[in-house]
Length: 216
Image (cartoon, rainbow, N blue to C red; front, side, top):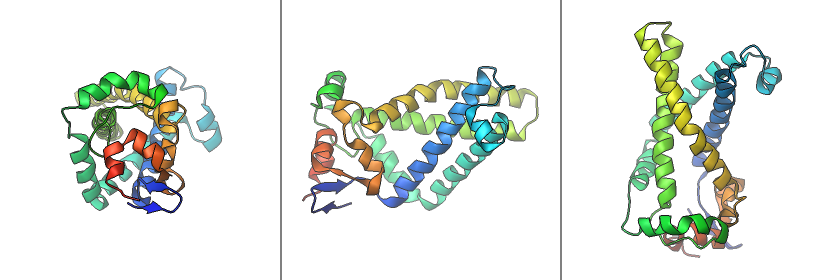
């Protein structure tokens, strides 16, 4: 991580950005096709199905295998990054409750409470939920692809369905926050795009202690 003369700080390196891009593209496709099928639209091709020439079920299955491959690749190649991510996500501090009390207003004012660590308290919870539910989706999805019926199929389907119910609002919330459309989170989208650099003022507002550890 570093800074440049323009007053920015690098939040994420290239491997993390590319992995994040791969995950969010596959997850968006999976949620779009999965919900389309769940709502009983299997006989009507979605926009994605018409664009690719594949059925929604086929597109959902293929994309699921891509996500499974990304997960396996990250576990092998990015083991060190995963350890850091996990360690930072499960680390909670005494002042986190105060941060949560200020958070509803801060998303509009930008006056977030102080917190330690790379992730804010809300991110830590979202990280844990996303990791657990996405792993549940990958494992149950692989199970559904490999098992043709019986009790195991029913169990995999139940896990897959409920993991989808849990992960959908978390993903939607993450997209809204990460897009920077909320005043308190303006500029944060740069952390995962355009080289991973964001303005130091934006980084200080959202991740104060982390930014302090990265001098000018």
